[in-house]
Amino acid sequence: MGKCMIIGCGGVASVAIHKCCQNSEVFEGIMIASRTKSKCDALKEKLQPTTKTVIETAQVNADNVDELIALIEAYKPDVVLNLALPYQDLTIMDACLATKTHYVDTANYEPLDTAKFEYKWQWAYRERFEKAGITALLGSGFDPGVTGVFSAYAMKHHFDEINYIDILDCNGGDHGYPFATNFNPEINIREVSAKGSYIEDGKWIETEPMEIKRVYNFKGVGEKDMYLLHHEELESLALNIKGIKRIRFFMTFGQSYLTHLKCLENVGMTSIEPIMYEGKEIVPLQFLKAVLPDPASLGPRTVGKTNIGCIFRGKKDGKDKTYYLYNICDHQECYKEVGSQAISYTTGVPAMIGAMMIMTGKWNKAGVYNIEEFDPDPFMEALNKWGLPWEEDFNPVLVD
Ligand code: NDP
Image 1 (spheres, rainbow, N blue to C red):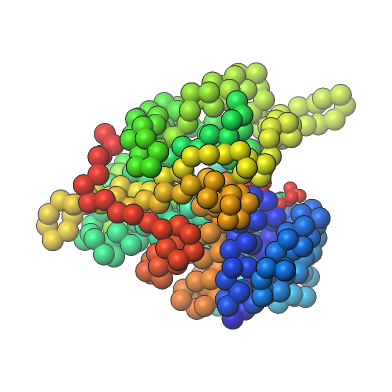
Image 2 (cartoon, rainbow, N blue to C red; image 1 turned 180 degrees about the horizontal axis):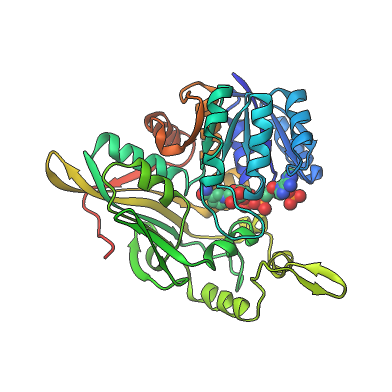
């Protein structure tokens, strides 16, 4: 069917690459292009004997638009799947525009020096993508990603209007370390140490970090503490889903994680303000990343399950209706299949599916779109097929 260039070769990319290789009918060729080429080559060596997908590798600095353009022009992919870091979103979008190549990512742009993630920078590309006749699919991971597809599916099949959405992200996995993050530590800690926020009646309401706590009993996991966080899909879902009065995002954290995080915050280790150390400027959070376990190394040691989904409340045919859509994913099953834990898996699978939607022409409109703006049905079908089957509950316990 076509060729995909995957940028980045970390935890999420590794899963997406495994999945592309399982799906050779669509992904006839992939190029893995990242900062450290040896990681790309190691994956190629492991996977090429197992797949018909032709794998190529390249070194690229994705902060450099000209380098990206040269590589895209040489390989001529149908789509570029950005699985580097949010800091690279705009340079990769620029290169896609210059070469008229479709673009997919899993996290919205964030400037390196302000831990504030919002869509305005990427939405500003709408007209240019439309004019170029290419698609940018934003946020094709799990959250954002599947949560948006779930919302579009609920809207299409179950509601006339959705008034309340609670997104619940539960990781019941245990890696046995006192403190580690499940994906890129710098991005993860920037996210959880930021102020919380949610949208009510069209307005953002800000909270202190971890100020709002609830307890929820998750199927497949059990009872967990969860905390309200700011999360990027709130911004787009509040605009794209009809009838929204309130939308919130909760993530589970264990007490040990929170105690470590507080301590690291208190001593200044989570700061993104550069400091001078022995004559060299360093960013404390980047130094912390260097001493924490690499998320990719958690795979073999993580046991337990994740349960991520959305509880919708709204109206159908004039009556109140509640609907919960979620996926349960087992860390060890993921590790057996692709050598990664479930956090990378639940992001890497939807990333592959997003690229597939565009390569197969199932999703085909020029411009910059969030994932809930497309027909959810083929994506929902693909989730069941490619390892993230979903479950539904028409009478869930609600979050107060
Ligand atoms: P990792 O840190 O494991 O991987 C990032 C990869 O990008 C690394 O291979 C890194 O190279 C490469 N990279 C970084 N900077 C550059 C650059 N300038 N040029 C080329 N390559 C570069 O991160 P994850 O795999 O955990 O996360 C990947 C993305 O997925 C992030 O944007 C994250 O926010 C997002 N994500 C989304 C989720 C969702 O549900 N939507 C959930 C989890 C993550 P090197 O190997 O040299 O370090």
